[in-house]
Each structure stands twice: as C-alpha cells, then as structure tokens.
Image (cartoon, rainbow, N blue to C red; front, side, top):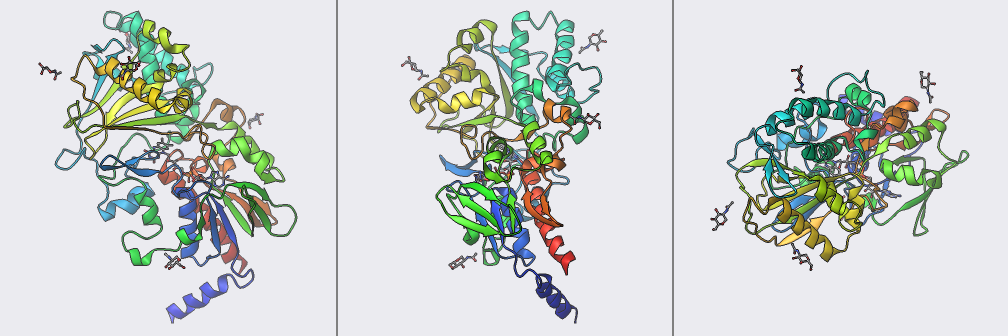
Length: 494
Ligand SMILES: Cc1cc2nc3c(=O)[nH]c(=O)nc-3n(C[C@H](O)[C@H](O)[C@H](O)COP(=O)(O)OP(=O)(O)OC[C@H]3O[C@@H](n4cnc5c(N)ncnc54)[C@H](O)[C@@H]3O)c2cc1C
Ligand SMILES: *[C@@H]1O[C@H](CO)[C@@H](O)[C@H](O)[C@H]1NC(C)=O
Ligand SMILES: *[C@@H]1O[C@H](CO)[C@@H](O)[C@H](O)[C@H]1NC(C)=O
Ligand SMILES: *[C@@H]1O[C@H](CO)[C@@H](O)[C@H](O)[C@H]1NC(C)=O
Ligand SMILES: *[C@@H]1O[C@H](CO)[C@@H](O)[C@H](O)[C@H]1NC(C)=O
Ligand SMILES: *[C@@H]1O[C@H](CO)[C@@H](O)[C@H](O)[C@H]1NC(C)=O
C-alpha cells in the first residue's frame, strides 16, 4: 500500500507542468551533483551544456607518468560535515596517509630554502610556521584596511622584532612573501591584502587545511560516485548521455513568460523552463552582462562584482629516480633573497618564478614533486613557451635545492592553465574587501531570479556556498541545493 501511494505521488508531482525542462550550464561537480539529484527525484528532462571537451570542470584528473594526478581539486578538505568525505569514505577510497604502509598522522617537515640554496630558519622553522598559522585567528578590530595581509604584516613585524638575532633584515621580505603566497593558496586569493580578515573569521575560511587523499585514484572519482557508476556500474544514471561537450553558452534569454532561450557559441539553440548556471565566479565576472538578457538583478550583479576570484597554479614533475626522501612528508618553502628577487622581478619571462610558494610530495605517488603557485604570477607562468618553461623550472629547482640534494632529471613536467582559460578565469573564490564594503554575500550570489514564484535562473557553484566555498564538496552541496529548490517547487505546486 505504502509503495503504491509513493508511486502515485511521484507520478503526480509533475502533473501540472509535465516534465519541466532543465538546462544546467557546466559539467563541474556542482552541475553533475544537480543533475544527479534531479534525475533521482523524477525530473528527467535535463541537459548539461559544457564548454570544455571533458566533464569535471575544476576537477580534472589525468594520467601523468604512472599515476592519476589532479590538475584541479586534489584533497578532500575535512572529514566532518563534508559530503565528499561522506560519499567516498565508506567505499574505502580515502586515506590520510602518505602511502601504503606509511603512518597516517606523520608530521610535516617545514623547511626553508633560500634563493642561494641554503637551508635557513633551522631553529625557528616550526615555531615560525605555527605562529603564521595562528595569524588566521583573532580580532579584525584594530586593522585599518581590514585585510588579512595587514593582519599578517603586523604579526610578522612583531615576530621579526623579537628575533632580530636570527632573522636578518635581508630575510624579512622573502619570508613574508613566501608565507603570503602560501596563505593565498589556502584562501584562494590573488592578493592577501584584498582578503577580508573579518569575513574569514565569520565563515571559518572554508573548511580548514585538513587534507585527505584519494590514494592511487584522483578526485574525478567523485564524479563517478555522483553518477552512481561507483560502486555499482549497473546503476549508473544517464548523466553522460544528457551532457553535451564543447557547448559554450553565450546567451541566456529569459525575457517575458515564454521558455528560456539558451544559445551556444556554435549557434545551437535550446529552450528550457529552468536554467541552473554553475560557471565559475571568474566567468560570471567577465561575461554575465553579455550572457544574461535581461541583465541580472542588482543583488546578483553586486555580489558577482564584489567577491574575489583567485589565481593559483600547479606544476608537477615526474622523476624515475626521486632526489628527495620519499618516505617523509614535507613542505619546502622558497625564500627569495632581496638581490635575487630584484634581479628577476622586472623580467617578464622570469618573474613568474616569484609565485612559487613551496614544493610538496604527493601522497601515494612517490615519484611526483609538486610545486604550488599563487597570485598574479600564475597567469604569467601559463604564457611562457614550453621549452623555456621547462628550462626555468629546472633552473628554479637547481637554485633552491641543488646545494642540498644530488638532483636527478625529471622524466616529464606538466603545468596547469586555469587562469588564462576563459572557461575558468581563475581558481576559486575568496572574501574580498569589496564584498564587505558592498554588503555582498554568498547567499546573494546564489539567489535565483524568480518569475512570479517560480525559480527561472538559478546559480550553483563553489562561490555560492556560504561556508564550504572554494572546495569540491562545497560545489556539490550547491548543486544539490539548487536541485532541491526545483524539486520542492514542483512538490509545492501539487
Ligand atoms: C588548482 C586548483 C586546486 C584545487 N584544490 C582543491 C582541493 O584540493 N580540494 C577541494 O575541495 N577543492 C579544490 N579546488 C576547488 C574545487 O576544484 C572547486 O571549488 C570546484 O571544482 C568548483 O566546482 P564548480 O562546479 O563550482 O565549478 P567548475 O568545476 O568550474 O564547473 C563549472 C563548469 O562550467 C563550465 N563552463 C564555464 N563557462 C561555460 C559556458 N559559458 N558554457 C558552458 N559551460 C561553461 C566549465 O568548463 C566547468 O566545467 C581546487 C581548484 C583548483 C583550480
Ligand atoms: C615579543 O616579545 C614580547 C615581550 O617579551 C612578548 O610579549 C610578545 O609576545 C613577543 N611576540 C612574539 C611574536 O614573539
Ligand atoms: C546512454 O545511451 C546509450 C545509447 O542510447 C545507452 O546504450 C546507454 O545505456 C546509456 N547509458 C546510461 C548510463 O544510461
Ligand atoms: C637553460 O637554458 C640555458 C641557456 O640555453 C642553459 O645555459 C641552462 O643550462 C639551462 N638550464 C637548465 C636547468 O636546463
Ligand atoms: C651526493 O653524492 C655524493 C657523491 O656520491 C655524496 O658524497 C653526497 O653525500 C651526496 N649528497 C647528498 C645530499 O645526498
Ligand atoms: C551596507 O549595510 C550597512 C548596514 O546595513 C549600511 O549602513 C551601508 O550603507 C551598506 N552599504 C552599501 C554599499 O550598501
């Protein structure tokens, strides 16, 4: 009896508006999560239009050397209140260890290498790193600009002044530069002086630094879990069949009462009752006035223009014979001496190297060395020709690590290009000073455009999540949120 009633309900849900047509713009984690939830709740006329030739968006797992690697989202950030963790952990896919048989909570060795190749800060290293870490918490009250950058500078100056014997004036700028790049990676910012310290206190600055890895797999596994291909391939939802690749949406016309018209750059036209846009904040900033006709309401526009969209990049090197100790976990910070920095800072071909914050090993993939970059330097790096880029990267490694290690030659090298790619235009969103000044909020960013009581244009994506922004799990939650909005709308109608 129960089952029968349920069946009746499901078939009645869409009695009035028979099978609403939904277009999802973007096949990143938020778009795929939205489609998955819609399909499982009886809304099946779903089309995903994706500009790139692949699904996944800022989750981009690819083969490199013998490994699956992540060019975008890589770690599951946090174990609690994290939907990605909840989905993957029960399937045994996640780990906190460096690799098989290696301890879970291994201490990370923080080391500082100067641009002259010396190991510096040997005595203070750990203490200094902890001190910098703690700068993330505190009161924003006494800050003039209100920025995280100002907060950090104040703290660093106090530290330097107490340690004049161990930290020479020549090292100060280099240390500040390196820790700022590192914190910009955490915050997803282009400039730490543009991050609102107040906002990161209030929203917890995303889900912290906890890093859980996918063992020998990579983050794109989450897409297969969302599509229900994992754990049981026979239960796969037809999401791939509803996805069209290389379809870049250039116009969304939602004037009047008729269906919404969506146009792609190849001239194809689609109609829909609802559009869920999941494009990055970077894409919205650049294109929202061109794409949406009529232009979006003031509230959406304000938050799109006010929030920040950061720039980060990865460089990965594959070594048949790693030159570092593959049994340890480390973060090696690159500290530029003043004279060395000055020598390259105005050289348009070399200054990108100042954006490399640190090198790390990669869990379960011992032959990989990972360089992390932040800030405007990333875009410069992306434009350097292949051969020159390789030569410069090897030169950089030689410069900082060549005196401490017997270096070997990498077999392969790969870099990301998120910032110059017009389907992303950056990496992830951050709470900027302008978003505070303009009273913008992530709720505003995710506010749908309504027609009477009906959501017509909806927004999902990492940047629209108030707490878990900047992450894959935040993107998934945002996709589910917008699917639920539609599911509830049609429930209420009946
Ligand atoms: C280098 C890097 C490292 C990261 N590391 C981590 C990490 O370790 N852990 C973590 O949790 N998160 C990490 N993130 C963040 C995480 O990857 C993102 O927050 C998340 O993937 C965003 O998903 P989304 O669905 O909101 O957007 P996206 O993944 O950007 O999906 C949007 C999709 O829209 C498409 N699109 C854009 N414009 C158009 C158009 N006009 N028409 C049609 N389609 C369009 C894009 O091609 C894209 O596929 C990282 C991101 C980057 C870039
Ligand atoms: C610097 O020294 C003062 C005085 O000893 C102390 O109160 C303060 O906590 C120190 N700050 C740092 C960052 O070491
Ligand atoms: C996708 O479509 C093809 C061809 O129509 C079909 O064979 C396949 O089963 C579909 N896949 C899913 C997961 O529904
Ligand atoms: C980079 O190229 C220069 C000039 O050709 C060369 O002298 C140098 O050895 C190269 N460096 C590396 C690390 O390959
Ligand atoms: C580098 O190789 C030399 C010669 O084999 C050796 O003496 C030295 O200890 C090695 N250095 C390091 C850091 O491994
Ligand atoms: C932001 O909100 C505050 C308090 O509600 C108000 O005083 C201020 O004028 C608002 N600023 C803008 C730019 O809307």
